[in-house]
Length: 517
Image (cartoon, rainbow, N blue to C red; front, top):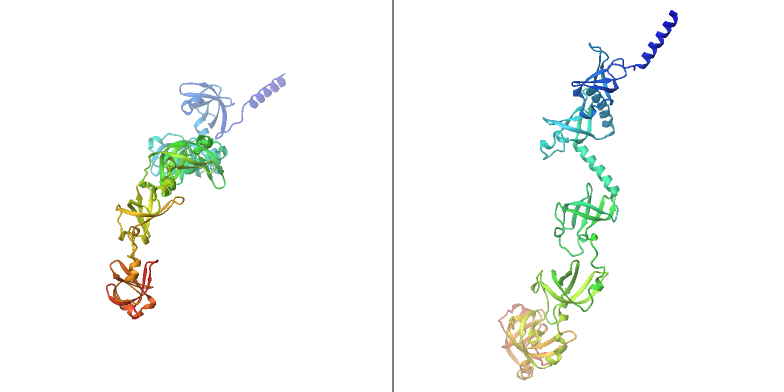
């Protein structure tokens, strides 16, 4: 009977011992909260007695009966016979293990700066105190109130196992966050899709748009269907805009963006909107030496070439006639949808005066006009119908050698001229000044027969001879072959020289001389 009782007692003791976990001091164990009191929490860790943990070591969300948590076993039995546990130390130990792992694989950790110290900040990372040097903080121009106790991501750059201390870097975490964001954005971007961004920088050729971690280029030609001279006409720094992805080059890291592509192409139905021969009104938006650009509607511009401004006036500088903002009525003379060009005309709205020029200005008639301008070879005269004719230097005087038209005429001077010819097709009228007087050369030929010897005054010296004055407004040429080089070398304008007539050409209006007498 005693043997049966002994066997039963041994079995019960074995069952009891098997039900109790084998736990050791200095280890982290799992426990279940069984009771919450005002200052302490009772935790069942599967041992013969319950453990006691100060309530201050729990976060509010962890204080829940039945919740299982990790605890550090400080003592199996204190003076009161209870197990002594620590929630904070368990968190710290587990946190350190994670910190060591994260420091090896580069995983970012969340932490909260809790104090500013000399050279940086103290940061709480999973219950471990870390140091963040200012040089690695990336907190430039940020107030302390916006840093302390705020959550940030950090990279662990150094671990000291002995002291259980860590060095953190916010700067490297920021870079990693950017890299991750870039990778994500590159995966999300698709050609043809619309993306939101902000204007980061503006250059002469376009604007760089921050798409949330990667930059794309919005070229000036893709900003508007209308011509613009600078990107700042469309966007400003900091603007939030939506753009179309035109092209992606992941290898080169380039993204091409478009803004105008979000709006309908105004040139799509251009032929039906603007027909050749129709009159249109528009605003001058640009003036160049070769013509004037007129905006007919948003995104549609036409060019009035200088040759289409006036039937009669020579336009050298359109800027003297027009200003940006002027409203003009024009006529469409051509539409090229493929080249996106519309040619406009101002003169086509008026009657072509050249159609009646030959009738109005018959050859040989005398007309009046005003000197409007000069070239080296003649003077332009505006006639009463606004048509222009030209007096060639050779038609200004029968006898005088004209160096420049301005030696004879002045701008704005009113003159009577003879119409020499009218070429309506090429829009040219030749005028003569000398033709209003009788040709004196037949009489000159009589006055200066060949072999006539006389004294003349040197006017100018050239490579082909010496010009001399025979009388007022009458000159002759001593051919270079008819005068010694030594004699020429001693001559100067105003000198007197003996000459002889060797040629009088009435048709060419020339007198040839020799100094070899």
